[in-house]
Length: 201
Length: 296
Ligand code: SF4
Ligand code: SF4
Image 1: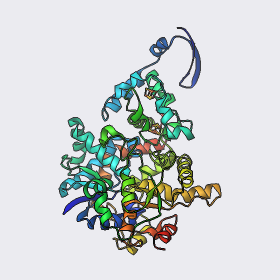
Image 2: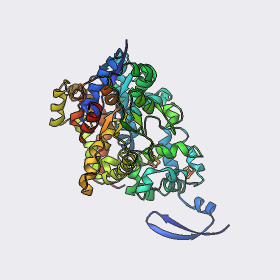
Image 3: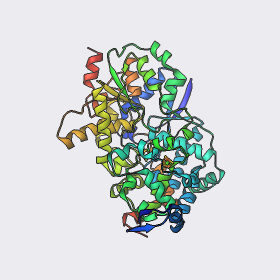
Image 4: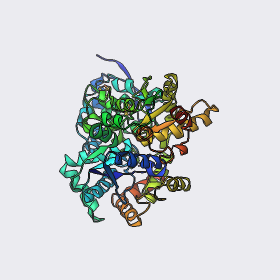
């Protein structure tokens, strides 16, 4: 069947007179492969992403989608079609709370939430990171805690009979040194630095 | 006596130390000793650091696990985020030699190694499986009669079920059974299993989105007549407790003031642990109305 399909290909909105199958062929599937390969390093069944039938069970289950423009089904479609920029250059990608409801319910057993995390990794590597996330990453790099202690809570700890500083990296400078070294070693410190400059490859 | 390595994470020791005290004291009443894991860092948060770089997330998680391996003890914790990270990292590494090689190569630079010799157990599993509601009921000195509790499980205790392997996440009853064991009444409310809104870096990155989701849940809890919220996740606790003050400020209202009491704090109240030791007086939303009802 021939139909008029509107596709938001990267920036340009094109109207293409093609069947869906022809359409899929027409798109650059490098991104499809990139996502599958990257995510498969960590997660199982990622290649199921190819078998999405756009049933919308995921989006229908999504608590974030109730409040925002985030449509997880659309991300899966963008992956199938290789629409990398549309997927990673959009802030809505960061509206998913990773609640896993969609992943639990997908009839095609697509590890949707795992894929969301992998696509976000790819976004960060391409210089797309929310400013507030850069700050949180900075706290981790500096303190080894995403939420470090403060004076108010130090006082509460003492008041209720606990040590003023918890026995975490807060109390052990050598341990903090280990964490910092690991963050350098994996390239995380540099990754965040680059992303914070808004490097957009 | 059984012993666990207690993984503190960030929010428990650095925002809700009362949860740390309550959990240690409560488990000790049942001859379960919690030994601190010294020199641990952020788990790191699964939806935040897992979204930035999975390899880093896994490496730092494996370092934390290696500390418990040195202690020779299974890990327990009081945060679904920490649970998600450490349990999933352990699950991934136990099933994937390639990943272990990659991660241990990083860890060797700081003289550490992941071996895969311990398990990660959520504190609610200790309460429900190891101790059990019956034994808890036997130790109640101050029944929480008439207290209506909205149970909030949080997302990452049961999901993804393929990794957690704790059965169907759609209709759990552990929290409700524990709440009933101390004489309180769990209330049903709309969208009970829905996310609090904080996870996945949404609180960190887009606080207004997070708070809107939180508000929807709060409206449902208030409508159901809840006297307080209970949860096994310190991050959800933070989102409900701190979040209510943020929502009130944002909207210019005072409507959102449902006290939030962690599951070990709630059981602790019934078993005679002092509210002060459990830091209840330092919660953002005053817990006093609940205490007044219990100790009238
Ligand atoms: S639930 Fe699964 S198959 Fe259905 S649209 Fe979502 S990803 Fe595709
Ligand atoms: S994991 Fe993300 S995309 Fe899936 S239902 Fe939850 S918020 Fe929506």
